[in-house]
Each structure stands twice: as C-alpha cells, then as structure tokens.
Length: 350
Image (cartoon, rainbow, N blue to C red; front, side):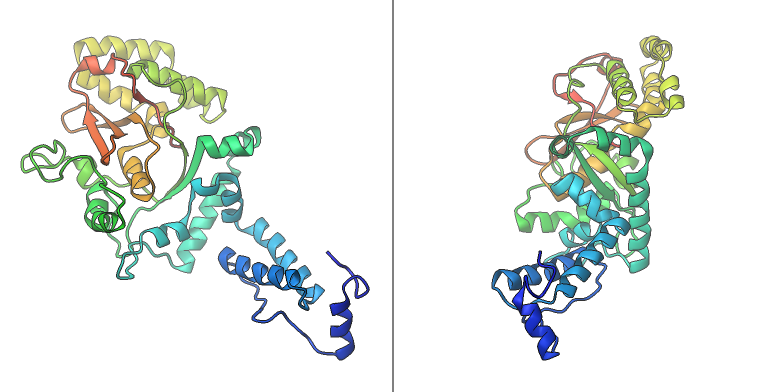
C-alpha cells in the first residue's frame, strides 16, 4: 500500500488542489456492522483497482476501524473460525424472514449487545479456546459448528418444536426446503403429537438463549454402541479434548455405569432416567429441539443420535435425518439401552 504522494500521484493532486476527492459513491462511516464495513472496503478496493483517487487517510482509517472491530466484535472472529458453520443473530433474522417480509426473529440493539457479550464469553471460555487453538482451521470447520439458539420469537412466544413447525414449515415448503419433520404432525402415526398423546418435549420444552458448539454429525467412533458405551465414549472424548469439568467426569465413573447397567435389568425406565441425567449426557449431547432448529436452517448433517431427553413413557429419545425431515423415536425397553445400532451415535452440543 502506498505511503506517500510520490508513490501514489493521486494523493499529491488532492493535496495540491486543497480538495478532498473520494472515489465515486464512497462514504466512510465508522460503522459497527460488519456488512456495512465490508461494503465500504469494497468501494475503496474497486476505486484503487480502477486507478481512481483515494485518500491514503481513508484507507488507514478503514484499517484502524477494522482492527478495532476485530478486537471488540467476536462475531467477526467466529465467522473466520467456523465459516458457513456460524449462525449468529443477523443470520437468524435473515433466514427466518418470511415471504411477506415478516421477521420471526428480530433483536434490538440492546439484545444484540447481550448476544455479542455471550459470544465473547463463549469464545473466551478456556476449554473452548484451547480446542480452537489445537485444531487446524480447516479441520475446525469440518468438525464443528457454532450456533445461536433463540429462546423466543419476535413476539415473545417461546421457541418449541411445535411453535417452530407452525410458524416456519409453510415457508420451508415455499422455498423448497422440504419437511421439518418426518411424517405427519397431529396424526395417529405421530407418536409424540396426536389426539391421545402430546409430548411435552414437542409442545413446551424450550432452550435458553445460548451459543452452542456443535459437532457436524455424530462424533467419529461413537456409533454402533449401546447407551452405556456411548456415555463412556463421550466421557473419554470430553476428557481428551479438555471440554468437561472434573466433577462431570468423576460423576460418570465406570463404577456408576456398571450400577446403572445392573439397574437396567430390574427397572429400565428408572435406569434410562438416571443415565440421561448424568451431567456428561445432559450437558454435552444434542437435544431434540437443537437438532430440529439446525435442520430448519440447512440440510441436516446429523446422522442419528441418542439424546439425553426421555419421553413421558420413560424411553430415551433419539433423533435423525431420514431424507424427509427429522425423525424422532424413543426406546421401548431396556434392550434399547444395551443394544448397539449402527447409525445411532453421539452428536456433541456444548
């Protein structure tokens, strides 16, 4: 980049004339929004490319603004790290804008400031930061995603599977994005929502506003194990990647898993409930709503994963993409906890 009028004659012309000349259509604003900043930078780049006059001070000011922006706005860092696997507030607002212009999600400046602070805390978490530092950039993008999960719609309605389906399925159909769920809702074939049974995990369970680091699909090597073996696998994965606390790891001891396996032979529902509530499972397995929300945004990369959620009848819930939307199943007996299924595994969410 030129640093003097001699190196860049247009700068000398500007200084001699005493006039401030700018590239046509260019206005430098100290914008906090990355998209606006990018547009301004592109105008400067085009002006330089076409050999049109640009003040060096403008370029330096833009560079200084970028440096400050990178330091203060973690959204820029997150986009650099995760690429298309990043889904923040602006991306959510845009994706969930209906054909008539109505936005299902819209955040005030104060709400966005809170979300940005939460993102900074997420990226600065020592365990997450260590994982990022140890993982090459391309591998990080191949293995992980970073999503903001909303807790409510613009009008204050909690985000549940049911409310997401009712509000966004028509738009998905219009865009040719397929079905949110595999099978019909409010039909006798839908075990979790019909005239006789309306499961709370579908109708009322919601997530808090949160940022989540998610695996792209199941963790490699987690498939074809029973639930107890999956839990042990997840524990060791978290230990190796320094993602879980000592309390979480210690609670999930081999002795505890043996006790629960024995309990499963006597009372499988009780065993399923206790196993799903172990912190390793509760805090680090994807939950059904997260899987459905991800699928509403882009074609799911999730294979089929057991979750840490149980149905009202006591069976643990598993989710998977079956070509025509997210399918939701549940275990029916203790054999499901002790049976390895080739396409069932662990999808990380933390």
